[in-house]
Image (tube, rainbow, N blue to C red; front, side, top):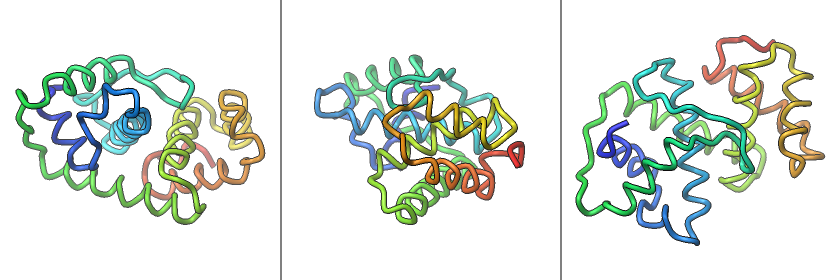
Length: 168
């Protein structure tokens, strides 16, 4: 993705770009990783794609990480790109969706994004809800005791169009 487009996305989500490469910027990096992951799934398009694998805080893209570190280092040299109306609408929709999920479960923002992102990651690979929940619990032991949150995330992701009713 062009750095100018990434900058526009992160600004739209109110992610503090200068914090991305600082020690105190972990929550900003987690938010960026999960929000771009959700956006890619919501758009169903390959032109924004970053490859993701499972990591400590859920789905993680080394390519995205490389891009946002470069963006943070060169922030003042890069102007915000233009987002299409479709992407702008989806970015705003995802922000609203994440806030709705967070509020419903009374979760902090980063934890809500970790649950949504990790559930989405595994839901794309398994068709049975029980297998999705088991995979999330195995990958994220810190979510032990949050099985209901994971099930709620699965239902939420399907109802909001991140999954094409693949998991029923």
